[in-house]
Length: 336
Ligand code: TXA
Ligand code: MG
Image 1: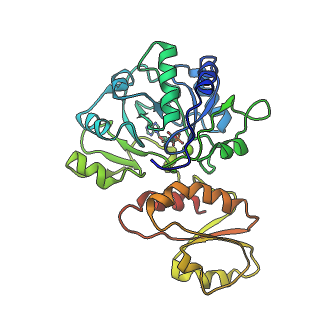
Image 2: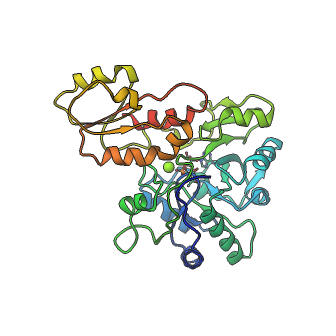
């Protein structure tokens, strides 16, 4: 994993465990994005997450565990496919949606009969989970954590993003923000639904690609259908900057900028598509050429474009090829 990770601060982890034990909220870096963590076993603490984010109560939240040994504590039925995927991709940016066990209360599942389980790889998230399990005397102790942003806004990939959005108490809404540096993956985990018989269903694309999942399972991974568990990450408008964002074909960018003369623009496009035109552009950013780097920097770029004082953001569509599914998915949701 690359990224500007900081060494784990043991004293900060101990403070974070005290906050969690008291029912408080801790923002913690994971390899994907910063999470807003609370004691998964405490309905009141989980409720506080929803209040801090301004998120509807009936949305499910991901339960973060230290390892696959916790699967049976939280899931009622752990399918063969689930064990295969956890064995191959955990710890890592993959969330498994499974039939819930009784321990997965309604506050975690949004009242559904499924639970989302993820085992993060980031050293700070792992240190926090290890200390949490030790504190509870339970290797299956878990932390509920959605992304640490206000509902519907851009996900945070640095501690500064969390400070600027939710903020730390007393002025803000989070009890403690752990600063582990920038997240090395940069977009949320791949979510796979294995809660029913039949093939795995892709609920949310991520840097673990459909092709990787299919290679490990030896069979097709299908798209989620209308009967799949509800996942708010799939709402059409999500991960959105405040400034309207428009996706444009790279070769149509010059013409679009021209048509928008008189509108202050912030533009994100490949270097080649930024040439040969001028316009009312307050910020131009070069889009990364590789999907992994694009994913890692995506939310920081969106934060930057949103803060530029533009009236409209133009983003060139990334390529359609293999490996770009997750970046294209997030950009599509950011466009209004
Ligand atoms: O990378 C990630 O997954 C990050 C980090 C913090 O782990 N978390 C994250 O959480 O993205 P959040 O709450 O912003 O998105 C979680 C997604 C939501 O779309 C939620 O509905 C879905 O996971 N989810 C959680 N439990 C589910 C369940 N039981 N059934 C269906 N979807 C579920
Ligand atoms: Mg989120």
